Length: 340
Image 1: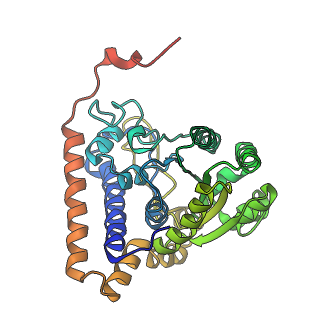
Image 2 (image 1 turned 180 degrees about the vertical axis):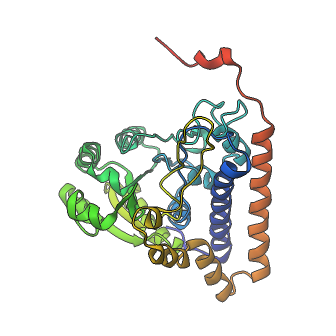
């Protein structure tokens, strides 16, 4: 694992800013351009440090798979944000030609093998990718991202069991975002997903289990980096629980015909009426938190940090403009990738 120098720390902040601004523009699209985004959309604001800290550990040959809360990962890998926004808008200039939408982004050339709207579906697929990597012997590692709710699925147990038995080069990163839709993680632990921290589940599969502050990109880098090094050296998988707080609602509301889709307030407020919890979580927002740390440590100045944030806003505005101006696929293309 490489040591983080100042240039790399600034890169990490830059990527966090880009991910945050992309998510912010997706969310604002529902208000500024009603009807442009159709279907479900899920944001990961609050998980930027976990995403960037994890992906900073990878080498160019490595691969990853994620769940449906997936926008941040390809951004960090270098995927064109204009193509990503156009994909979310369902346009033919999109990353997947408009066929995938928000929950099904893919950029295989950059090692981003895909996502799924099915909870835990990506876990066995990523495990299979790790098996293929082991057979190829090209020094590859696979990162597999999923939420805490996925750890209740059979696919989680089956995959971790096989990965441990065969010592596959994979790191499972469980991003515990405090809520499983509208179920608080405390309720989940007590009633459905026994174990606190959830990384304790690794013991059942004879692999290391680590819990890390997912709001600290350096801590995530060190924890996931150690697991990546272990996997790359042939010692097998690790389960990392990255504890974050999802700052947006689980997803947008699918409204009746004629009613614009929108994002509700957070479940802490809407379901539990606990505004204090939500306000406290926003004070721990990883983006301004890391910015303040870098400024305090004189890694960059406040003016430089502002310039990075403005560049991210400009980039994502251009992505929105590109997506809005792009055309939809032709109706005749609807069956282009349908096979029987």
